[in-house]
Image 1 (cartoon, rainbow, N blue to C red):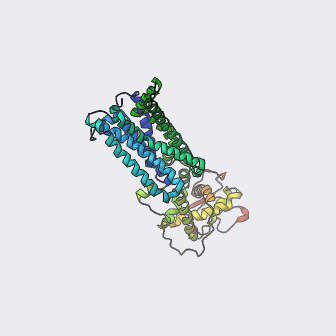
Image 2 (image 1 turned 45 degrees about the vertical axis):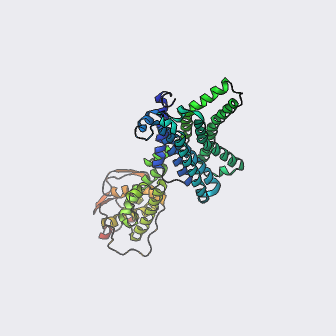
Image 3 (image 1 turned 90 degrees about the vertical axis):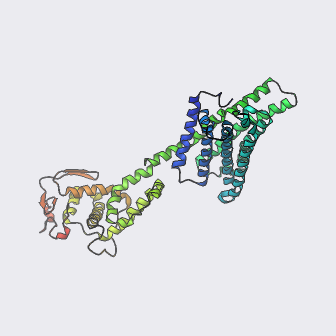
Amino acid sequence: MWPHDHLPAGITISATVFIVVITLIRLALTLHTSVFGRMINTLLGFDAAAALLREPVFARQVAKFVPGGLPSVFDTWHWLTVTAWACGLGMALLHENGPVRYRSQFKIVIGISAAIGLAFLFLSAPARSQGMTSIAEYGGWRYGIYIGLYSALPVIVSGYYYILKVRGTVWRTTTLWERITVAALVCFGVASSLPVCMMAVSVALDAVGAGNAFTRNTYNLVADGFASGEPGLFVFAALVTVYVPSAVQAVVQQLRLDRESRAARRMYPLWRDLTAAAPQVVFQLKRADNWNVSPQERLHRRRMEIHDAAEIVARYVLPLPNAIDDLIESTVEEDDQEDLRMVAELFLAAKRLTDAGGEPAGEPAARGADVPDEQTLLRLWQPTKALIHSAGHGADRRTPIGTRRFTSGMVKSGAITVPAPKPARKTTDPAGLADPGNRLAV
């Protein structure tokens, strides 16, 4: 009899820990979810608490602080399971009646669950007064009613889901995991209903005098399984495996290893340089709010801030210094030259704004320069920075858009190093730096 006779503690504790860990991950990390998802989390929370109280190792410790001792722990464990099933019925009501109409019906279901919990305490009162471990040890008609009340909601939920399945409304679920949840609840309900039906048949046969050793053994087997809670524990552990993928996904998102977080990290250098020049576009969130932002929202915000900052910076774009223009022409493949010139103009404008603390000396243009698309900015931003910085160094430079050797044929003029001008493009100012406003500081 529970909590003395049970399977090896290592087996049941492992199943309990698995249930609790998956539940805690979902409760802590799946904050942005649908009403259906929150109902799933509530169901898991009640059942995880029930699994903890069912485990004898924990039950004995909790019983020291609970009035009534182990019988009260036994009642609480079963009431938590009933309430979890009430949440399962609430999920069905949600899909049948919508997110508004289901609320009044769900409140009634929760009220019935609370009434069943009070009935458990009333039925187990003799067991508490006699110092027994549970109502299962006391037995009698009280225990029969106890089992009937405990099993009522699983039977109702299973039947209701079956009716919805026949009518086709249960498949209005919007995601694969919601459908799997519905199917798992139906299977779990059927698995919970069968033992109750077997007990009812055994009792009925004994009542009419048609019982035999088989019916009595069936009754004892089911009653012992109900008292220990072990069959239900493993069935529920199997149900929880449905939520392992979503829990793993939540952990991956929390560690910023999901696709959206990786994309946001790739955008960070571009975002950092542009928002340093136009910090007014960055929307500062409180720490708690920032913690709760989903990866999709974070990526969308970063894209919008890049776009807005680029539009602001583009109004302060100046023509490229001739030296940089010549360097692009001599080191970059022809297909990328025009895009890289636009990116270079934007980068230099951002640098001037950043050096000025975000407050430029001159007035912005009425209409900003053309801003390259996001993919072009991401592809060419780092190579553009590398190319501009390399203008001050005589060395080999390899970039994703081409490889050239900066040879001794380069001449140094002013603050940057540029290639020697081509004969066809001779000018009186080969470096293009006669105007101090065109000088690039590196």
